[in-house]
Length: 167
Image (cartoon, rainbow, N blue to C red; front, side, top):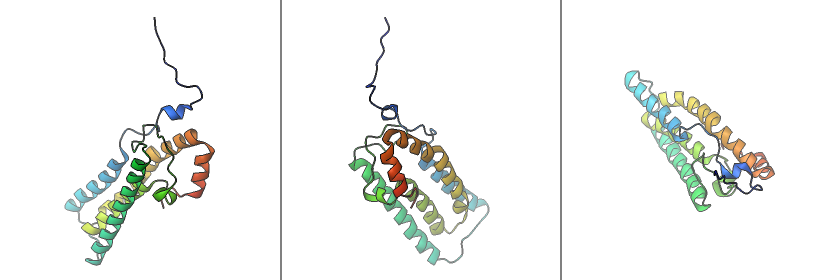
């Protein structure tokens, strides 16, 4: 005899599953942009002029990006939901750093790549950063937004109208 398990029919399907994101973790796209840029810098230099000022600006951007990323992680931990996109979320976070950005962790990672490039004095990671941003938007953010819209309906729709995707 075969048995089946049913979930509560009043629970939306989105509550039982996470976003249908591409299986590569989004931070790897940013890491690949930075690593590819640094590799190419060793082969064909693409130096950024204006040192040491650009290095100081880069350090500031990198630290600000790290702070933004960590604020997003802290909010997820505080609200006891998940940071892993393909797992179901338990809370739609709209407070703290999420009042200013719907994606503070992805924004912070982009800032870290840009800041790291300026700090290292190379333009190569900056050349690859748009590819990482496009990959994250298409393969992670859009599926996450579809999931959250299904999961939270008008509450998420209102949040999307009030808060920018990036900054």
